[in-house]
Length: 196
Length: 268
Image (cartoon, rainbow over all chains, first blue to last red):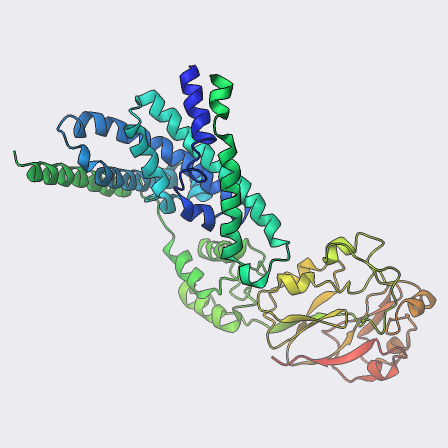
């Protein structure tokens, strides 16, 4: 139990996907302008990361490892995740239209997101079992959400600031993102301190 | 077996399985899409302004295709073109959109209207009017912070000397500014017709109005007496023109001692 909690907290803080591993930068810069879109995107990412891990884990152990095809992981996972997200989208549209309205526009964006593919591949690299993989994926999604919400707050504050003309727009956003990332390096060792 | 062959077989099988599953799912779980509504939606300008009274362009298109409304002329930004296009798709009779444009009924600019306080807070009419009804002495007139300017999607509104002014050539009569203005002093008027417009909404008594604004309506009734068509009334110390009755003769404009009534012809 303690080990699982440790994996969860590590995925959120010290190994944060956006701010420490620099995966999923595209939605991080693209959808973080407003708080509610940032939340919508993050919820969709958590959801997709969870189901992607649940599906790719058995494919990896049952198919790829069995026939010594580990080198096909990347392409097989891209294929499976893309198809899966499309499938989920169809199901949501039919049965839970309200959830589809809320997440619908974000789901296709996530299909080929590197953070989703990254978490699946890293689970295998780390040698995690099924439960550990799921916890790590959900934790990575929550970490994604934390970073998105924090950065949405930063960007909303930036809107009201008098920014030098040369830095206006993307430059100041990138500088702000790097500062937030540096601040996250301060979490190094925190998780070991809590659970160790 | 050759590793390349294994890889190709595995990927091909996986791809085929995924593709088949998706194909089946899209057939089994297909959601019927209202094609008529989609076609109507393409005719609408997509401003999502809400002037039609529905929740944006999608809402209006859905209501038309389901027959909840038969009025094809509700889209002001789309105008007659949209009305005709909708009529063609739905088979309804096309109704004429009366071309309108919004007008700010206030002349309380920095010269005419006196101020009671210097406002330094958030530059928003809504916020400023919370504080003693706004920085100007007159609590009925234009606050001049430009909430309407910000909400206008067609860049038709500008602030001139502390009062919002709308360019009728750019205005699409979408009512976004009408609904945003915290004082409710923006109204729609017919285009290309000469009408008398009361450019004041001050409901204070005449002597108070005089102190607050040089161009304010004091409710002196001169316009009511001079109008031959019974088109002008004074309600709550402020003149009101009935545009249905007004023929634009200009007599009230000449009679007004404060210059609060103007003859307006909006040209698109």
